Length: 447
Image 1: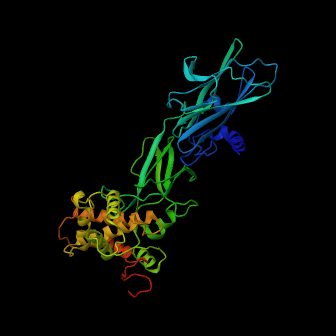
Image 2: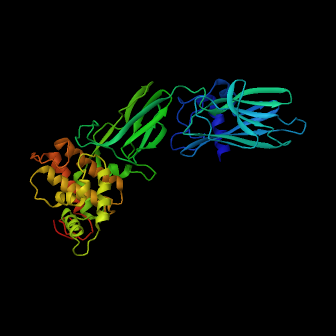
Image 3: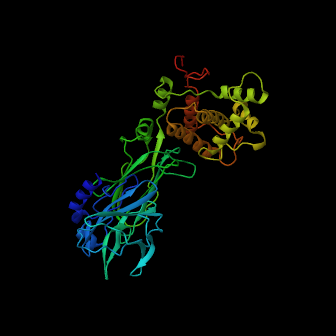
C-alpha cells in the first residue's frame, strides 16, 4: 500500500512539493497542504529514485509510529557486471538528534563522509540483481527533507541528494491553543479555567481542506507545527473517531467563533482558544432520563460512607484505605485550590465538607463537588470521563473565581447566576445515578 501511495505523491510532486506527516499520520502519503514543507529542488525535480554509480537508490518511505520516525531506502544492484559496493553512506543531518537505530546493523556505524555525519554501511553485500533495504530511525515526529546519500564502488565515490530527515525544509511555526470550559462565558481563556481533553481539532489550509488533525491533551491544549502559510482552525461537531466532539456539541454551547480564520501565519501563533459553556437544560434532562447513565451517589450517601469507615461501624462500602486513595485522586483533578486535605486527618477533613451544616454558597458547592468527584474516581460516574471532568471544571472554575485562594473558605457570598448553575449541575450529576441513594432525580421518582 505504501508503494502505491508513494506513486501517487510522485505524480503530484512537481505541483505541491513534499510535506511531513501530521501528528496522527504514519506514512509519507499523509499530505498537509500545497503550501507545506518542500525539500530541495534537486530532490523535488528528480523524485524518489536516484542512480549512484549504476546502483538505484530508492526512497521507500517515512513512517511515524507515535514515538519514532523511520526513513527507509532500497538499494538495487542491477547485474553481476557491477562491482560490489565498498560502502553505502546516508547523512544524519544536524536538524535531528543522533539516530536511535539503523538497519542492517552488520558492518554499520556512525561515521562521516565528505565532512557530513551519518551512517556508513561497509561492504553491504548487495548480491547481483538483488536489493537491500536500509533504514534509519530517530526519536520524535521528524518531517521530511533531503539528505546526502553516497556509494563507493571500487575507487569511485558519488553522492546525491535523496529524500530524508528534515534538512532543507523551511522554518516551521507553532500554532497552538486550547478547547476550554468557559465558566465566565465570555469567550476568553483565563487562569481559573481548564480544558476539554480528547477533542479533535482540525487545521485547515487556504482552500479549507484539512491539513493536519490532532486531539487535545487532558488540559485541553493542542499544537500544530507547520510551514508558514494561510490557515484556519476548526473544532468539528462530528468526527469518525472515538473522541469527545459529538458529546461536546450535544451538551455544551460554543462561546467562540468556529472555525477561526488565522490568515497568514508567518510566526508562532498561540492563544487560539475555543470556549464552551454547559447546556444546563439538556444535561439535567439527560441525567434525569438516564440518557447520560451513571451509578452516582449523593453527598449524604458519601457522608455516611466516610462516617462508617471512620467509626468502623456497620459494613462500610469502602474501607479507610480505599477512601484515602479516592481523596488522593480528587486532589489531583483539575484546579488544586479547592481540595487539598489535611494529610494527618484525611477522612475527617473530607467528612467535614460532606456533613457540615451549609452556611455559605461556597460550602454548598464544595460539598456537591466533592461528592461528584468521589463518584468519578470511584468509577460511579458516566461512561465519558471527558463529560464528568468538564462538569467539574466548570464548577471548580466558578468556585475559585468567587472564593479563590485557600480551600474551605468560609466567605458568605451571594449566590449568583453562574454559582447557581454550577451547584445545580453537579447536584444533578450526584442525584441521577442508579446507586443506593434516593435523590430527587433518581429515575422512576417524581421531581
